[in-house]
Amino acid sequence: MANWFRKESTAEPTSTEEKADLFEMQASSRALSHSPLLTVSGVHRSFQVGGERLEVLKGIEMELKPLQLVMLKGRSGSGKTTLLNLIGGLDQPNEGEIMFLDHAFHLGSDDERTLVRRKEIGFIFQSYALMPLLSAWENVELALRMAGVPRSEWKERVAYCLELVGLGKRMYHRPFELSGGEQQRVAIAKAIAHRPSLILADEPTAELDSQMGAQIMSVFRSMIATEQVTICMTTHDPTILEVADHVYEMVDGKFVS
Ligand SMILES: Nc1ncnc2c1ncn2[C@@H]1O[C@H](COP(=O)(O)OP(=O)(O)OP(=O)(O)O)[C@@H](O)[C@H]1O
Image (tube, rainbow, N blue to C red):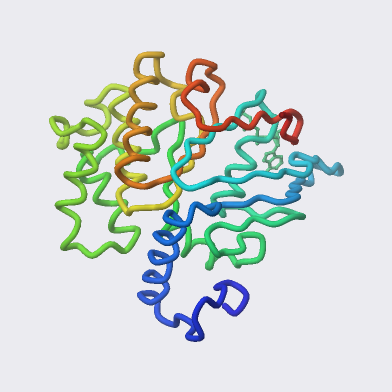
């Protein structure tokens, strides 16, 4: 663990609880300081496909500042999801650095990145990724259980998150009893429930009509204000891009300005 936690005090955290406390302290001090939440420097990612090497990311430089809504745009296959996976610690670069809070995602082991991810990152996918047999309430509760949030906090937090996304009256519906926009709002409540500092969303509005897409963006905006979260998402939709604080355009594995 020596490389993983930057020493801001002389005592290394040892237990999972101590590490969790440290994450929270780092996240809140980061939000106050306005220094970047995430920095990507010189990142390359390639894949071996058959006998060939496919260069997908070719030197990415990027920064996410606290409380920003940042969007990645680019043609299909340009590398947006590959980058989102690296930022979320689901994958590692072949070259370059990814610093998230004070964690070096390019160096950490799978287990170390998983620990940070569970605590600090929420994911939202185009296809909602809800458990079909569980109600909206149970889906959000499951996210809290997975993140190790004490059971005593679940009830209040689940109710709060579902209210935040405007589903106060649909808490006990199962996914098939909800519209696409409502299902995506459950997915958002799930992603935010454990109080992450970063939300990563891959095409969160792609399955929705423009009115529902606009509603999701308005939920994102209120989440940034009330939950002190930073959001990085991919989109193809030009009307949605207008809402962003910053847009990175990817062309063939690189950002163009
Ligand atoms: N694990 C992998 N192995 C091999 N090739 C991969 C892998 N992951 C991604 N790729 C390739 O990398 C390229 C970029 O894929 P990526 O999913 O990042 O694009 P994208 O910009 O998100 O596209 P879309 O908008 O269609 O989702 C594609 O050509 C894809 O086939």
